[in-house]
Image (tube, rainbow, N blue to C red; front, side, top):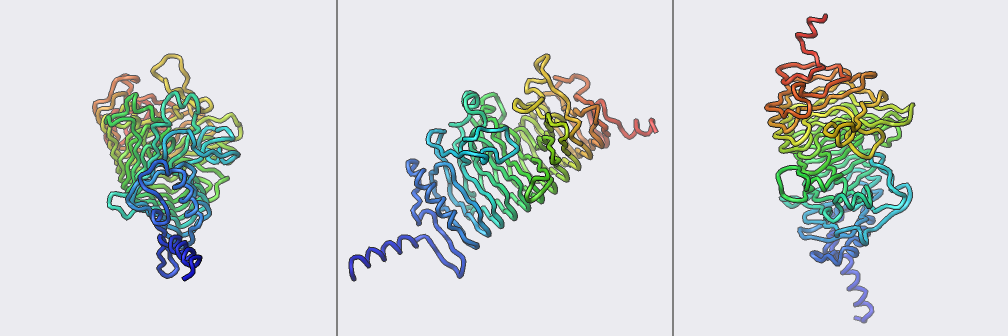
Length: 464
């Protein structure tokens, strides 16, 4: 056989070594096709190969990552794909730090309206998925697969002072329909962990998020160094997250708004989160920033959640806007069968966003530090039909909560049914237990202590 023919045949065999064909389906084995395991110095070449394979995926294809650790540089992308599967049996681990991380320019830096504005030059996401349908992210490993962001090298107050929120999300999904994510574990993201923006028909199950500075079973000052490490942030419609858990230093399971500019939904709606564990800044609605296109969250249920040593518990928040014609909505929200054990800060917060980076926000130092500002929610936001049912809080370190509406446009139909706080802390609200104003509220079925601005059935009957 001529030497040239032998060489060409060898190249063909090498190129197809990791590809199995079953009728029209293809199984692409990342390692067999050239991925190198356990070598951090191969991060850039592994990422380049992974991007080529992701770009090549056709309907019914499966890209397989074997049960080893493969180091990657950032900037992994899956765009414009349909009916494909990523099976992660091992670990994809992103290299540490900002040095050498790929960047991008233009409006893509502010594609996500939920974050503060970034410069028009920014780092790329660790793993970015956009314009996809019928996508499955799964694992054949009984322990699941892992995405590791090596976030510790990005965290900290000094890094924040230098770079703000110009940090990569671990997994960012935009404009996607019919998605299943199962048995993936997300570890130490540099920034927000799992973001699904403008999606329809998303299911997340048997997944976890962990962002820890150390192994302390609480959110101490050291662990809070990993702030902005949101867990699951989702917006869109028909979303179901269950049998999953989050331990992080920011919002845990977060329902984000959409407005009429959305592709798959013009309001985030029809969302169910159940059978979850969460410890961080809580089971979160918002923040809802009023927009000219009516930013909206409605028809959301959180139920059967266990929150051990969480920082905040139930956290519903809106933001203020300088735009006089803007509007927003938070309506038809149910929290049911929620159990908290010794939350660090506020167990129940319904009101303005407490943060440092938005217009007329409630100060992070409020109410501990005198004279700091905490304006009420904007009158541009409708708050209506919010129910907390069978919410039990044990041994919170602070007073039970904040229920803080705008007296010029009070929250309507806020109902507490069997909301019980056992052994509440005394500070900061003392014998009032709650900061409570600007609310049309009703307390039922053994709710204790009573929010002071709520009615009860008995008081309602006496006034009718």
